[in-house]
Length: 265
Image (cartoon, rainbow, N blue to C red; front, top):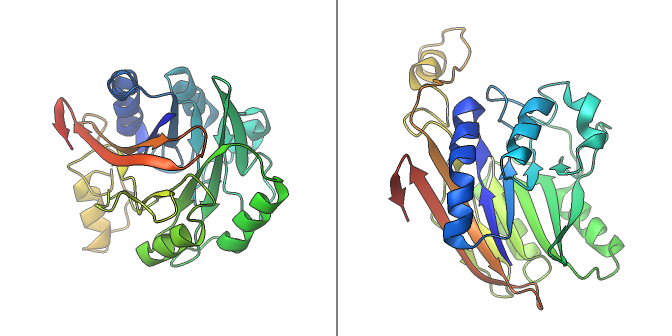
């Protein structure tokens, strides 16, 4: 089972980057299932239904969220009907939807779980560790591949979390920082891991946003919003994960980075 995981999609540029590349990347790497983090897909914060459907219709099989899960309140109107959307499992607010979803991929069960971290994050959440452990205990040895999107800020927290579930889940893929890390590897007991899959959007901005709007606010204290340059060059970041369908262990994990037609990695 080969899974393609796209890092955080940032705005229109990120959506276009994914939609323009998902088919050719799926063919190149013989992908069976596509996951994308879409918590920033609508104007950089949140996910409206139109953009959710746009990505699903365009070739993404599953969309995960993160700390901006409620930044567009329209999500409350469609989340219960969005069967391919996975919101954070451990949030305290009741918004509907599911924090872990089971997919049937050509007869193979693939579970996708979304977890929010705690360090340097402002959302009120239950313990990431105990939330996932409780879920796994409730599955009664379910025979499925299990991919966890761990949406968190601190690399140390992500690494510790990966070790805690090494051999228990198939892969722990970090999201949220929008910067792809150079640590994709297989842990000792067979779990694929990377601290952050990166982001899909403008490669010449700041975390997907137009650089001057970020500089003006962050460095010079101006009261302005982060903007997205809709004409920016398109970049996709992500990882390819190869999972043994019998053991559910990771056989291979490697990052991908594509800017326009220029390929990296």
